[in-house]
Structures are given as C-alpha cells and as structure tokens.
Amino acid sequence: MSLLQSLQKNALPEKYREMSTMELEERVRKVKGKLGEKLFIPCHHYQKDEVFQFADATGDSLKLAQLSQDNREAEYIVFCGVHFMAETADILTTEQQKVFLPDMRAGCSMADMADIHQTERAWEKLQELFGDTILPLTYVNSTAAIKAFVGANGGATVTSSNAENMVQWAFGQKERILFLPDQHLGRNTAYNLGVRLDEMAIWDPIKNELVFEGPIETVKVILWKGHCSVHENFTVANVNQVRQEYPEMKIIVHPECSREVVELADLAGSTNFIIQAIEKAEPGSSWAIGTEMNLVKRIIRQHPDKQIISLNPHMCPCLTMNRIDLPHLAWCLDSIEQGEERNIIRVDEKTSAFATLALERMLELS
Ligand code: 13P
Ligand code: SF4
Image (cartoon, rainbow, N blue to C red; front, side, top):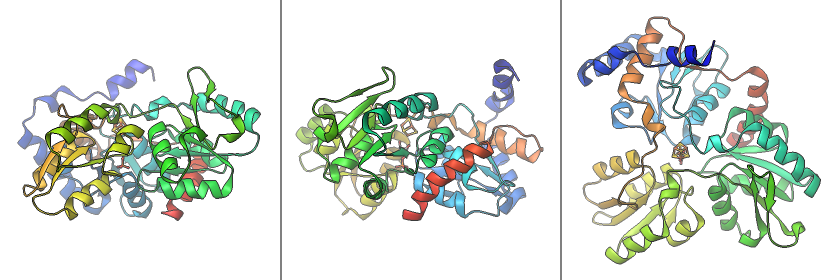
C-alpha cells in the first residue's frame, strides 16, 4: 500500500466530524454494550475527558503495561494513549488479541528522537570506546525496535515510576548504563541514586558522537540526547514566578522535566505519583503541577478543596495524546463492530520476542 493510500485508509471519515457529541457518545456506548468483555479500553492519564470517560481502566505507563499483560479475555484492545503504549500492549498480549490505536498519528515526539539505526550506530561506537561494560536501558517511550535492541543486549525497559529500581538493577549487571531516549529522566534518576553530573555523558544521535569533558573512564551513565517537548516547557523561570507569587505553594513535577526544574521542585514523580500526592494532600493546601494539561485540568476539577495551578501558566498540551478524540474513538469502535480491520498495531514476531525480554525484566522487578 502506498503512503497516500495508507493515509487515506487511516483518515477519519467526514461523517464522524459532523456528528454531535451526543451521537458520538451514543455510538461508543452501543458498541461497548454489545461487545462487553470482548472489548477493553485502557486509557492513559493524559487523555482528553471526552475519551477518558469511556475507559475500562486508567493508569500511568507502568500500570497500563501490567494491565495489558494480565488481560487475557479481551479480543479487542482499543488503546487510548500513544503509539509506543499500544505497541507495548501488543507485545504483552496474546496472538489472538488485537490492539487498536484510534488515530494512527498519535505518536510521541520523544520516542521519535531515537531510531533503531541511530541506536545501532551509537552502540558500535560506544562498544569501541568502553568495551563490554554498558547495559542499555530504554524508557518505555521508545519504539518496539529499540525495546528489542535493549532486550537482545541484556537490558530492560523503565517507566517514570520504576526508573530508580531499574537503574539500580542495571548497575548490578554492568559498570555503565546507556539510557534511551529521555536525557532528563535518565539524569534525574541517576542523580537521585548518587551518580554525579560530571559522571554523565551525552550521546548526540545527530552528530553520532559522545559529548563529555573529562577522563572517559569516569563515565557511568550515557544519556541519549532526547527530551519531551511538553515537559521542556516547564522552566526555572516558571518555578521562580510561582515561588514569588505563592510562597506557600508546593511544586510537583514529572521527571521528564529538566534537572534544574526537578531540583527546584518540592516533589517529582510519574503521573500516578502526582495524582496520589494531590489526593493525600491536606484540604486547603496549594499546588503547582508540572505535567500535561489534560491531567492537570482533571486534577484541578477533582480537588475543589485545594488551590491547584499549572506550573506553566500557558499550560502544555501533548498534541499527539490529544489526537485520540471522541470522533476517532467512535470510528474505531464502529469499525470493530463492522469487522473492518483498521488502525491495528502489530509488532512483528522477532521484534516482539526480544522486546518482551526487556519488558518482562522490568515487570518482574516492578
Ligand atoms: P507516566 O509513565 O508517568 O504515565 O508518563 C508517560 C508519559 O508519556 C509522560 O510524558
Ligand atoms: Fe511523549 Fe511527552 Fe507526549 Fe509523554 S507528554 S507522550 S513523552 S510527547
């Protein structure tokens, strides 16, 4: 199939754009009711409310991976999240189960910052520089091919909620770590475990070179030069502004934020950690949250007894998460009901086998 044909096949039909919200919701309810247990809709915390309301389960990346591994009943898994999450679900489910992504354009700009060819090139060079002393770890926000590469080389995946455990585990296996593709999560995690900033090098995949000042044998962590374009929008200036305007306010951020921001914040953790911290907080307490806007808005609505703002007053949406909207969800479910095979995420067998190694090493330790 040509690229144009594939884009046309995956493009939302006009009639779904023209339907009212009520009509779309009715369609979703109807298919859900009809398929019952055969259908499972896992949903990430960053999803829009119009989609989130139909979730059978919600969670952070780790929980959604665990749920996919545990669910053996559903024939159709309609994943409301981004591409790498749906790939993970496909890897962890059985051959008979089908995983769907309501909009195939829902990628992740961070996952796009590391491709398998760059990774293989990097690995070759790093082996020349450091010999067999490196264990690769990849944030789940990466392609299935990179997970497979990591699995084949003895490494594992990590999520923002188990990164410390996994980095600790990795140091029990090898002297050094290559951490893909998010330099910030890698740096923040290693730093919390006592690795000094001057023991961390950066791998630049565009220039295909290691960036490090100092004796090379002192490198403990090699950070892939990738980042999240949403979380990079939370800055030291935002923190200073909040500290000045609301001296009592607590600042809580996702570890995809830069080291400087995490250092100045009061707390940092996964989406699940953020949700729980606010749930446990005293009524009347005040919070500035540094993470994606759909989640921040939901937390604000759920806690009218607390004063909550976004750390960045201009808020930061994840445009790719937002691609999963009610019209795409309704279309996807209608297609399943009509037996049409579209928007299926399928990881090939060989990639899946090696990626499973990386994912299972993580799931066993989580
Ligand atoms: P969590 O694992 O914290 O849900 O984060 C996923 C993600 O993509 C954050 O940008
Ligand atoms: Fe990817 Fe960032 Fe969006 Fe998370 S918030 S899915 S890391 S682009």
